[in-house]
Image 1: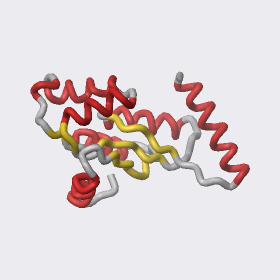
Image 2 (image 1 turned 90 degrees about the horizontal axis):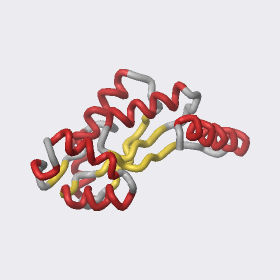
Image 3 (image 1 turned 180 degrees about the vertical axis):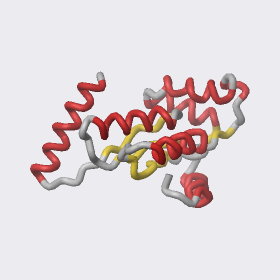
Amino acid sequence: MSRDEEALVLRRKLDYARQTGTELRIVTQFGFDGTAFGLWAKALCEAGIDVPVHVGVAGPARLATLIKYAMACGVGNSLDMLRKRGGGLMSLPRSQSPEIFAEPLEHYVSQARTGVSHLHVYPFGGIEASVDWLRARGSWL
């Protein structure tokens, strides 16, 4: 779907939400490039889509688990971000911290109006590990 088509669909949903008194928010799929998500969220604001955005992030998990979910969920292209970070998938650690996603997103959000209000954590490595990571972060993003 093109950016224009995406904006049109979201505007229609926003119009419907306003007409029906429905609270609308956007919850994204997970990905591995926080800056790309920040740019996308900024573009939404610039297009007049002014709703809270909950950006999906894969919680702490083994690399093999992340690759499996990325391929199953259609975010395989985002694996390029992991490759860039580590010089190749084989050189990456067995476990991957969500910080490689959250830190760039947090930096971007602090610099621009994006509508990003929350992280939506996908607990692929287990709920306990995800909760521990969020507690250790000490911030919403």
